[in-house]
Image (tube, rainbow, N blue to C red):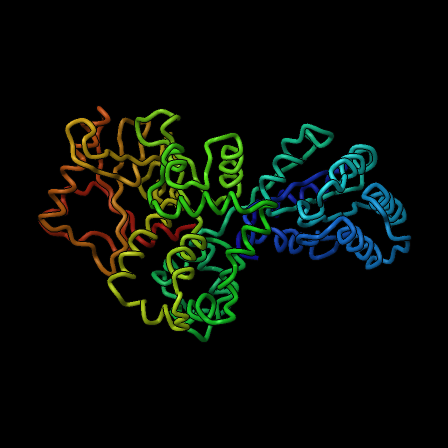
Length: 472
């Protein structure tokens, strides 16, 4: 298995416990949750079951009954979840002594409309399993909002019952590199970054790459061919995570139009399909928990000025290219790959890759142990005395320094010319004036191959390169 050492250690620790334990695993769909649990326990479960996507109560109970049959337990087909968990208890009581690993995957799918599933699960755990010493119950789900609401922050019987929780994060660049190497795929680090711009760290997507194809050929096959594996992933993704996906799709569609994020008020004003009410608050919280949206506060601004930004790489790629490929060009990416438009897209997408690797940037700057605030900054035209200006990444440090980061996805050493040097100086001056920042300001360039040494190079205090982003 690539990575996941900490997560595996947690699960193995629970399996060795002298008491019954409840582990909760959640995270973005396609990130590798099921694979993590199966590999950790070597597929050796006393009982394992996965919910049925969009299944009715009858469907879910039939599937559960079938899972019981798969482990050799014969019983009548359950008519409700109380009898279903009753049969599971009777089966587990007949199992040999020792810790019994029970894995319930895609838990939110099992909770069909008015099914009573959550109450029955609460009774199973609180009234039976937790009173024993030999049960390790691992529950897993992609609908992070459901997992948090019904398990981790439950107002019912599961409140504060989880022994450990694992919010499984996407792969880093370093883990993606290890993954492709393990599959015998030769990829330059620059290509790995481009692939990350599209796949993010979703392990399932990386597993679809063919070693015999170039990256452009892989993109054409996966996204633009008639039966591409990821051509219709968008609909599956959001409908599998959210029971009522339409309001979520309306929000991310609006956020997809603005690369650097919008305030809540700007989001509402951008679409007639979005209303400023409690449902919007719930949807935004769920999107944030699921890793599709990030909420962050601009530098030196209050929480009420927080910005919302769509950061899911697959979704942004879908909006930008797959959805707009209306002429059905099955070799679209091979044709588009070397164009100036592609270079412009890479420049914007590289910023998201950097934001996903803030810890690597901080390590390269030698400030991993310094308290920091990661933010952006923007000034609209007409505010104060400056023209419009924007900085996508500011690292405010407790040691009285602010790193203003310029992220450039150059194909070689990045060269600062006279015009850009002037723009950089003006931007720094505007930042200091508008924020009234009193500390030192360090200009930091994050670029694959560093900054070319010319007469403007000395204005750069620090550099972060491709190799830094790939460090473990």
